Length: 313
Image (tube, rainbow, N blue to C red; front, top):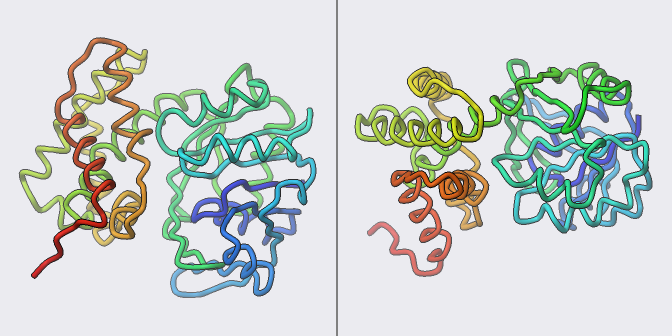
């Protein structure tokens, strides 16, 4: 199978690396030239439990180098999705399956503007990875990680099932799941209710959940999100989701979320497709969600004031 990964960040490299290790023809496409050059010269270094495996994989900054693929995975951040999909059209034929596992709400709508909905598969993953530098990632969650997918329209066809089998043969646990919309909202609760507050307070999971006020904030954020989800036709139990979030945080006390890493590295976060997207859904349904509104505003202020930050004395 020929696979194109559009967006060679932490997760894109994780998917591409595992597939290439199983001798699939895989291309990584990214605009970061140093990253692409390092991968082409030295291979992709995938660290798992302090061991680094150099995986030979093709990388390019130009999607036209790749040609038509059997499978294209869109793995960029939200603010890059539109440009990435436009460029990726050079890799998409009538027979191509296009997969998105991107965070939050909104990416799917952008992809569907340019790609036939019958080709699109969407979902959510619990896999974890960190980009450590040009050509280097650290896989933080692999064995226990699961990825749930479902076609945007209709039922899974032979091409989609073949793509799922390919990921599974590569050691990644991919599952066809008709309840994927519910799973996406559950992950939204995790990202909006835990990952984003961690970025605001600059804490890892373990230190955050030791604070009673922090836990109350998470509980309130989740309660609001569940209310919005219900208006979107997704029924969730707020207390059950809150408990699941706390248990996940306990299992990974040292984990630093992508939102936290973005803030620490003075980058733009994905807040617009997380709490921001939930706010938009709330407005459409005439629902007030003050906790999510405040959290969204705080992140926006942090993003806009990196150059003026007062550091610790």
